[in-house]
Length: 382
Ligand code: 0T9
Image (cartoon, rainbow, N blue to C red; front, top):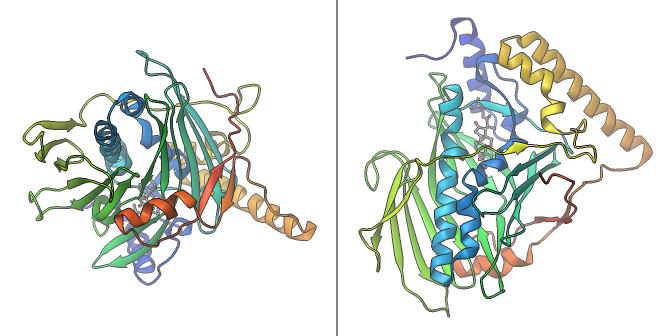
């Protein structure tokens, strides 16, 4: 079936043509109304923690091996939300709102059953190209994820290919009091179904989870590979060069179930993603607990309302207001010889942890930039 409303057919076709002839920043392109999402990309980092108990459980594991397996389980559990949830909530993948420089999102997953409270902080650290930096932290357990992401897009064989740029560092305080570091890289995306106006994501190629003790290589395949099914993955865990431990292989589908397929637990279940998930509770970051003007749900509220209610005229008028206001700010800064100051992060050209861990899995490039969190949480606790 065709999901494109008849009245938007020609604007969808010309949108696809412009994607095909242009590679770069898709997020800034104007798309027809039916494909617009009312949610900004600054909300996406919340997908990293929709199962907060899997995140906190990492710190409870007593051995290197059990911890890396817990990291893998948590990582795999996030993929369904990250890459298929818009299809479930909105019928297809949609074009997210393109965040402004300095846009913020704060949230919390409250303590429940002793898992501790987990907090979320997101800041748009670049507009052109769009780069989003985030922190997710469970302080009581000693688990903290700090990362950033950007995308490079191209068009091939009717699909959009998205290379994810950026990485995340997961810090885990072990039961013996040592802090471990895990480097997490991100898979490549293919966006299919464009012609019919019902885009969906398939993951491709390889991503890594690397620590000083273990290297985990995750391969992604769609229909017709490995098992022949969509959303397939195969994760191979081996001790890092110089470390000891057992090898494990886990195989399955990242949106449903997976099993150990080799190693001491071969044949046993690994994970079932179909359990309950928990959306983040959005909270205001002002000292009053209110949302500030740069907090995503306040900033985009009228645009989002327009999109939700099918009032695209208002949506586009309100979107232009925000964009004009941004342009004016940039002009004022240029005139005053100042630049926008980030609130929660500082940029470094080369991340020493990435530089140390990436060679263990022969990850390229050998060095990558990073946004260091300033440890300045606003009062988001519940
Ligand atoms: C990080 C995620 C990322 C962001 C989105 C490619 C994409 C923007 C980036 C990579 C998250 O952890 C995971 C999931 C979905 C990704 C988005 C899917 C998407 O289509 C957009 C791009 C910019 C578009 O909007 C393309 C045009 C659109 C009409 C296709 C639906």
